[in-house]
Amino acid sequence: MDKRQLLKTALATGVIASPLARAQAPADKPIRLGMTVSSSGTFALAAQSGQRGVEIWIDDVNTRGGIDIGGRKRKVELVKLDDRSDKTVIPKVYETLIKEEKCDLLFGPFGSTLTSAAANTTELAEKMMIIWSASADSIYQQGFKSIVSATQIAGTLLGQNGVRAIHAMGARKIAFAYLDEPFPAALTQGAVALAKELGMEVTANEKFAKGTKDFNILIQKAKASGADAFYPTAYEGDQMTIARQLREANVLFKVVYFVYASQPQFLQQAGKDGLYALSQTLLHEKINWKVTHGLNRAQMVERYAKLFPQAQYPADFQTALAYGASVVTEQMIRGAQSLEAAKLKDAAMKLNGKIVTITGEYQIDNTGKQFKNEFAIMQNMPSGPEVVFPAAVATAKGVYPAPAYNAR
Image (cartoon, helix red, strand yellow):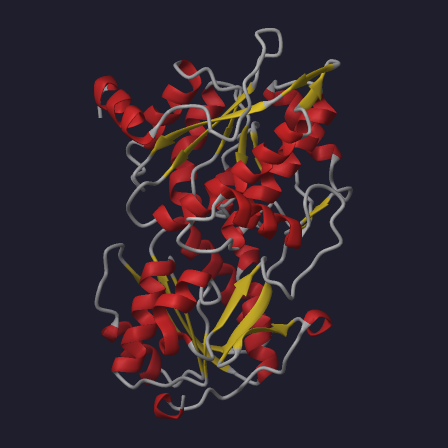
């Protein structure tokens, strides 16, 4: 994509200040926050949900008059470009945000695949990039100095609570399958390691390519392996397809784990195919952290409804991750009293153990990797999702084994 095409894409998708940002006097130059949002492709639903989380924060912070830097209040302006879920355009688009749009700091795109592609560009420009969704450990192993995962836990830790829940239910044999991309691979790597540590037998661990539409071979392999539990990891669309194909093939496991099964869009589109599936989430009316900074869950959901009455889906955990990351960003700026990457990183380190957002506690290491914000485990019951793990926040006992499809 050349510069002319990039600018054409920018105009088509609105490279403008968010309508939620307020007008600024010349002396009070706004903080320009840049990010890319997928208008189409694999990551579109999640990216747009995250964007709304950022815009909730912008509305809140600007209503409060902005962020104090050096004794002056500066409001926040969102500048966004379209990445079309395509990692090949990411470097040029982030370069545009930095060089042409003059953004002061950046939010990463959705997911590890796109964020990995953005990190080199932001690092070379010495601009801070706040990560709100990318969890692949590989991002934090490359020596980047100007990245912070504000709310998204590291990938190898992300899927482990699901394994703990499956083990607690009674499963002892587990089959894994994963999309061959950084996030699903990292999540599965950590989940497999914990399953073995708990003494479970890993009966299968298969990867599949992006664009796969027919998962029947993977499903049949997992079933033939003798697994009690099936744990396929991919993005939302693929997981809906797997749920449907499991039912169509009448292949029944005692428990199935889909990362996104408690998402509003999954529940709406998958219907009965998603019943009794386990999943993980950070946002649900039954999960409420004692928030120290920013809006709490109920307040954020209320603000979402007010600002986005025409949204196709309600707020979800991607909204919460992005909103929580925005709140952390505000505290970084307040602590640094600067928008310089090095000072922001130092301020981010000083927040360890001192901040709780709607997604939970905050703790990073010097690579910017997040260790807190652990997900609760839900199970889709006929009456709706319930928290089944950990026991401290459980609202129902998990159903194990899952009933046959014709009994649902």
